Length: 298
Image (cartoon, rainbow, N blue to C red; front, side):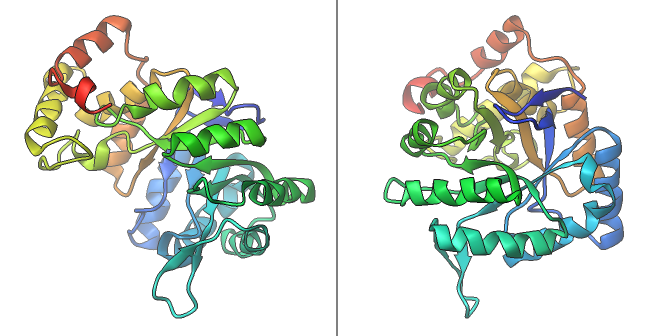
């Protein structure tokens, strides 16, 4: 397992991380999967107060409490559940963040969160107020560092200019290379680490039937999946190649991958234990994509 320091923080994170949102097995099954992940070197576990209306944090808190000091625990805030359970509303306000963290700490059974992330963000948000909330939580010792989870380049740029974020979680894959043009270089230049989500594009790069995705047609998605499969040859499963691709950019410090089976965990671990794609391999892989993909899907 390879490790990298996340941005300007003191968090040393594994090259692949455990995305907890879909962890839906029995308690015993979940214990086996997370236990093997930790034993294999995965040390970042990412959840959110939104997942299962807080239930995912409870689940992860129970699973990692015996090894809390050995892992990097990340969660997210900003989606306020409605009292009647009918859904949630976006709330990046200072008062809400300061109250929400207390509930997350209780559910996670910890007295500090390693990485607290704003779960979204718009240009209409009271950003200075949001940043003030995170900075206060750092001063209080309730969080060690903070970041944002966003796919919006304009929002990312504002937080780069106005805050002390150490990380940005963003969607990035062979089917969504927008960050290569819009944010990865900026974040690398400013010493901000990237947590990549969606590296296998909802399974479309692995084993799911092709369907339209973003601006890609079903046929084009199928062509990209075939290109990945053709590239693989004897190199390993498609998931391994898809994950290795996103890790090749120096801004990306870890790929956060949803894991809920031992088979998926094995694929993720294989990717983590392989070297980065070489320049020749990258060229070969991208060459197999539909000719118009970069012009029309940028």
